[in-house]
Length: 91
View 1 (cartoon, rainbow, N blue to C red):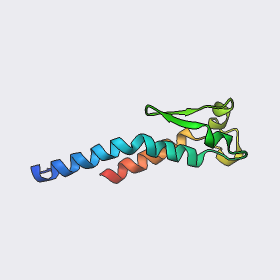
View 2 (view 1 turned 90 degrees about the vertical axis):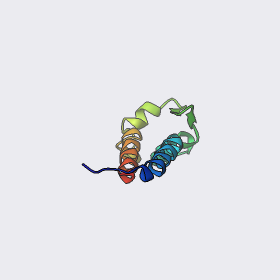
View 3 (view 1 turned 45 degrees about the vertical axis):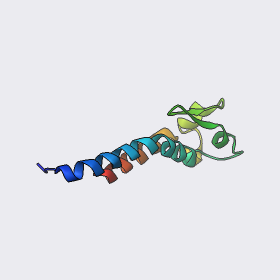
View 4 (view 1 turned 45 degrees about the horizontal axis):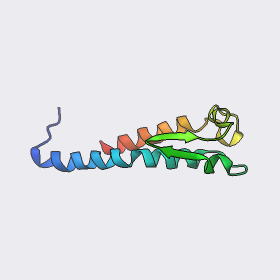
């Protein structure tokens, strides 16, 4: 087991706190980045409201279920993988 001394706890806590503060915005940016683009409506209509990503367009579920060849994995799964990768960087 690795021990962490008191001199490391403060900086580590601040690092984790900053990560958590920016996580919703970063997730939203990643979600929009992987959203397929044809007319741009889906990207423009994806909002972040109180830490929740909202697709405010009728075909959001279809896109997220892989309906578009541009995003066969949808947007949620790649966004979750992005978060997992960011968490691994914290270790």
